[in-house]
Image (cartoon, rainbow, N blue to C red; front, side):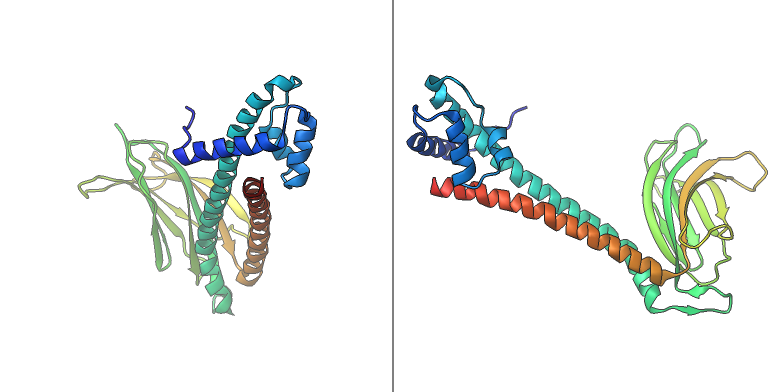
Length: 280
């Protein structure tokens, strides 16, 4: 469905059309018109070509100029939208990055080796990816994670026996031998939540900074009985928080530089368009 222009945009289209008529007469070819827009007003050639439909019939120039005026304003609006979306996406990435790096930053500041031979302040990253539950007739599953002194809870997924989350959690590790207890629950709006199944995740097989995605069976009462479903997790144990913090910081700097480059190009294009409208 086409979005209608506002009264202000329609007025701007008419003004732009009138100004174009003053500068581009029937005697000027469309090729020269393109050169006029590209060179004199510093609009990128790709911008001009994307919004100016060229025609070999001079008698149609006024129609083409009117179409150009409309396309030009549409292009101007699209650049504004792209810039807003880029800034919004960057802000979302920044919030995710800050949330993920904070426990690692704190760990970096408090590094020491404890009596277990584990670097105090090392970090376990956990991603709750998805689950499959056998509960009938339906399930409203959510997951509770417990590791040493910390606990985390995912959101609940309503009426779904194959829920997906992709929710990340980080916790500092003191001992390095304690299991991560993962409990899958059925959410009931009245507060009477029911147990679906439990699994215990050992950290013994995790290597420093290696990321693994593993699907674990969940059991209602005890292992060796029929499973109640499965839980897929992404696990990463960061033994050396210093190196990991530095690598994340470098990656984020690259992401930030990329964002500034992309937004600068969009902002320069907007300035060129605005300048074109103002001085034409």
